[in-house]
Image (tube, rainbow, N blue to C red):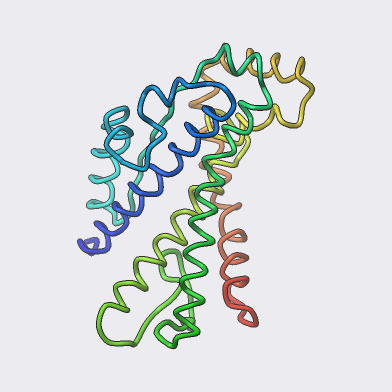
Length: 233
């Protein structure tokens, strides 16, 4: 039976992290000239507009999965203008990269807080590390709860960034492919992907099967950078 408190912590972290992810997409699109998501209210760190757009993926599914398994599973989206993306494929690619970049920013912030906690002797590097348990505390007061929270932010945002960067539709890594192509090739790629929606389901299946082989080295590589001199994995 999942720990109820930890499940709710992970849901809150998922909600805030996904909100920043989608807000980053919307902000990058607006900076690139597409105001679709801006007018939809998605350039916001308020979760409400994002929940309103995807109530099942942002609220119901992740909350139920967190309570049932201890881990939230969900999805969200930010609208964009396909015609704008066709005219400006490189800008559309940067829009795709903005979401994972936001998650990586949260990883860096969580890592900085962990390092500050270690320096202040309120956090320490555990003997063994696993997802969601990247730091610990023997200090009194709120520090053990904060260790759980920053561990959740570090782990979940690293997962969100790594998973979304896989180059399979409908993930952000697929949307970022045009940044490596000429404009003509990028438009052909976009048309091909958008006209074959079944690739989205296939892409998710393939990405999920491959991810278990990708994420462990990413996770333990990041943890070893977090604690120089330690060797986890």
